[in-house]
Structure formats: C-alpha cells, structure tokens
Amino acid sequence: MSAKIRKIATWVEETHTEMGRPIAPPTRKAVAAAVIENPFAGQYVEDLSDLMDIGAELGGLLGARAVAALGIEPAQAESYGKAAMVGENGELEHAAAILHPKLGAPLRNSVEKAAALVPSSKKRGGPGQDLDVPLGHKDAAYVRSHFDGVEVRLNDAPRAGEILVAVAVTDSGRPLPRVGGLTHAEAEGKDGLR
Amino acid sequence: MPELDIRKRILTIEEIFHEGGPAPDTPRLRGAIFTVLTNPFARRYEPQIQGFMEDLKPMGYDMAQQLATALGGADNVDGYGKASLVGAAGELEHGALWHAPGGYAMREVLGEARAIVPSSKKVGGIGARLDVPITHINASYVRSHFDSMEIGLSDAPRADELLFALVMTSGPRIHSRSGGLEARDIKEKDGLR
Image (tube, rainbow over all chains, first blue to last red; front, side, top):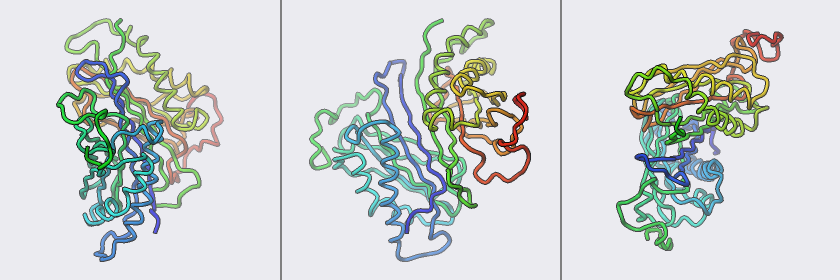
C-alpha cells in the first residue's frame, strides 16, 4: 500500500543571532512533513505491515525533501530526527508502525552514512497541535552540540483519520554550543554512538 | 539608522494535493517567509519612525525573491499577502512599517500585480500565531484565491522583536467551487475585478 498524501509541508529555520551574538554561517534546520490518510482509522487491525511500507516510502520522500530544502549535499547533513502524530481516530501503534520498522533505512540513504539511531517522538493529537521532533547527530549519537529539537505544526492537521509524519534534517548543531561533551569534529561515526 | 539585527528567518512551503475531494493534476502551493528582527523602537514612544521603512526595503526584496523562487518562480505566483507580529514591548504602529517595504518588494519581484496586498498585524508574545490573508495578485475580487495561511514560531517574537511576513500562493483553493469572479475572467485593470 502506498501513502495517500493530502499535503506535504517543508520548513527551513535559520538562526542568525542568538543572545545578541552573530551566528555565521547561520545554523539551519529543515522539517518535511506529510499528512496522510490513516488506512486503519477507527478500527483495531492486528497486522500493521501496510503502515510499515508507508513508513519506508515516507522516509525516502521526506528525507530527500528536507535535504533539498536545505540546499545541501546529503553528506553535509549533520543531524536528524523523526516523529508522527496520529489523528484522534487512530492508535499510537500506528505511529510506531510508520516510524520504526522501515522509515530509517531510506532516510539514512538520503543523508548518507548515518550510523546513529534516528531519535523519534510520537503522540496522538488534533489539528494545530505541536509536534516536537527530537534531533541527534546522524553519525554519533553522543555528539552533545547536536542534541536539539524542532517544532512542527499545521493548523489543519492531523484530522481524525489522518497521520502527520515528519522528518527533520539539519546541517549544523545548536547556535552557541558550550556544554562540552563529544564534538562533531571528534566523532568517529563508526558505531553510531561516538 | 543602524543595520537590521536579524535573529531568524523561516521559509515554509505547503504543497496541497487534495482536501478530501478529487486531486487536481497540479498541487496547490502556499508559501511563507518571515524574519524575526530586533525592534529598534521597543520600550518607548518614538515619534519619528518612518526612516525604518527604508532600512527594511532590501530585506523585503530579498524575502520576496526567496519566496518566489521556492514556489517555482514569479510566473507561478498568483496570490499574496503580508503581515506583522510585534513583540510585547512594541507598538502596533511598528507593525505598520512593513506595509510599504513588504508590498513594494513583492510587486518588484512579481512584476504586474495590481491588487492591494491584503494584510494583518497584531501585538503578541512568543509562540503567537498569525493568520496572513491572501488574495489574487491582479484582482482582489477573485473568489477562488481568497485564503489565509497561519504562521508563527515557537520562540518568537520576544518582547523586543518584530516578525515580518510575506505569503505567496500558486493556484486557487484546492477544491474551489464557491463561484464568484474567476481568475480567467479578470477584465479590468483596476486591481479589483
């Protein structure tokens, strides 16, 4: 089954100054989000494999959209994240089926390498509700400067029978990182952690 | 006048495929670009504020260009709107300073655009949302293009900041069928019909 998409929205956020300090070049985050029909809204369905396939499709599509929105080469991506918000007639497990089994591999292809876990969040919600997409370094999860998040919100989604699926990609960490820990430059990126 | 102190810029594009009805071949596009910058007049009453409009012009032009490009070029754009959101230590009047630079910038980028640019403005806090009105660029009465786009940002505007927005669209509402003047029937050159 392929996704029945009502909308795709992309969002690029650039931070030019923070606490009065210039950020040059600006730090940048992109989110690509799709609003899809939930094929299992209003019913309990045991086998969620259709949603897993939709997850694979959206991982590639939204990953590529987010990278394109930043105007970067895939290898220039530094961190990523994913999240889903299920409309009120759906089940939290529907978000899990989209996000976890198959979405990651095509997303990793669209940002290259990407050994680290893709951080995620999920919830049930209605139109206009905020969804915070967690962000972590794509090659080494312990890179402290890249722990972050980005908010996505569409005033008309998700409707009761829909799911909002979001993928976030950045080409940078936080604007003024200074809490120590592993740095981007030090990361080896082999085991996905350090 | 000091240089603009820009903290953030957001570019967001919605591609709308359908809204429960038959999906047209071409999705509708709705885009917004907005800039968060320091309000040079915050926390006081400043009688002379008009010089700031000149300072905003290059930024407005830049934003209009970026947004039109993101929508596939100026030829694709047939709807527009603009808005300002003033942080809590500012005055509604500061939001009005966006009218001239925002509107002229879009006209400069879009070429012929006869209709008045619809707008909204308000004072608000961090996370406030703003509905930006949209009408057809050449004739305000084109019913298929009446719309609005909600924008906002979780961390702006801070009390001393301004948020200035431009919105452009490509195509009518996705299932437009409420009658009235259609874009193909625009006859006058008055910006209205």
